[in-house]
Image 1: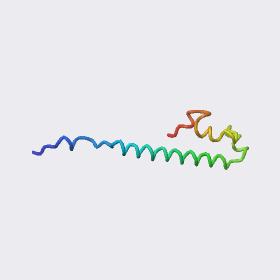
Image 2: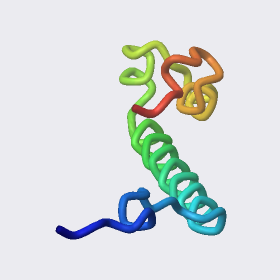
Image 3: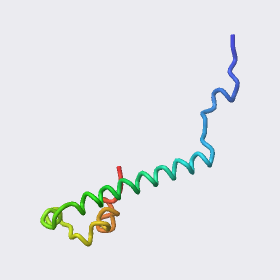
Image 4: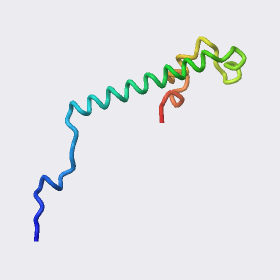
Length: 75
């Protein structure tokens, strides 16, 4: 019969540096996603923006969630 050591059954946990790298990567991905959304909205004409209820001066606020916090949250 074989026995298992306590270290073999313990799940691997990431150290603080690995969590920090993960948080930085996530923040960078969110930044690039928001910049892409802003660029796509700036490419619309004024009529297209008006159809979705935005003015050109509100694009960055809308993408950031300042106008409606539920819209700014990434899923």
